[in-house]
Image (cartoon, rainbow, N blue to C red; front, side):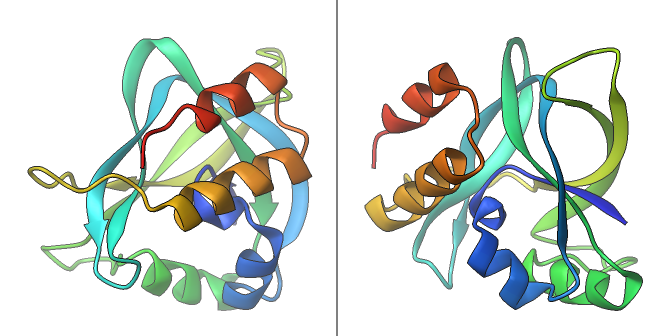
Length: 152
């Protein structure tokens, strides 16, 4: 499965712990979406990442290839179970674009949060995890700057 990570799963160590088969494919852009924190994580105790529609913005992230045996681990870590009525996230296939180039689409699975009313902001540690991963994968400087402006 091709998987587009835009939140804490961009962190290579976290991703390899959750999905040992994960291999890096590329940096990519999900157009017409923005990063938001629309759900509270009980485990982390803070708001966690979501990509919500916004025609004026884009979300950058990382595409990994994951073998089928690890997909269940990823689903579990994202609070998703196929067929269950109340999932924390949904998993949908969308096109993302390699290095932001619209002539290079990749079909990838993406997790979108089921929004909650009044979730808290991300914690400084969670925000830092996303920023450090964005730097590690050399996401665009202007995108990293926008991540640094997120209030915790």
